[in-house]
Image (cartoon, rainbow over the protein chains, first blue to last red):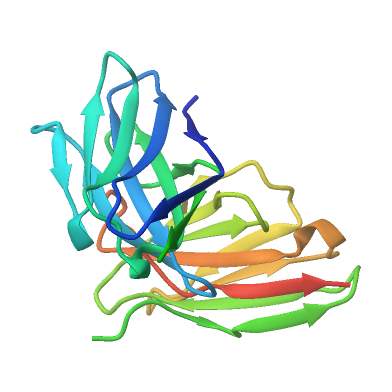
Length: 114
Length: 112
């Protein structure tokens, strides 16, 4: 079985500050890991993904995440928050080497203060 | 190019009724997956279809069913609606069964 834990249901940062959203996963096999963003009343947009290879993954809008197998973590970071980053962020895992049956965390709502 | 489209956008039903939600994948995509997102939670996997065959099913009761048509569009059916079925239903399409999934905007179902 696979699972995802997102620490902090709500994170608030100031514009220009570092964004750090935490994600820990559980998987019995090497995982594929994803971060999605959801803006109000919209579907999910893929920010970045880790499948194999380089453990530091760069995504869209300046976000990046690092896969740390020893810590079973895949935290999402962005050096400088922008007002437009305010949204809900979901970490997801898929085990078994395929993209179907994504298991999502409960989400972290990011608020960016001016 | 058009993304994944879903209809209707919003829907209000009463307990015990039946509902059908529709999804059109990105052109050329052969796989469609359905997810349920209850307010305040992450999406939960319901079904995946590939080439009109069910390839995966999540932990949902038999009241939930789906099918995929020859043009790769899909329908999600829910019978005997319960209040707890109120959620955002997301459809995602992928080129093949094991490719990156692209999500539609969802259908917001409210059961009264």
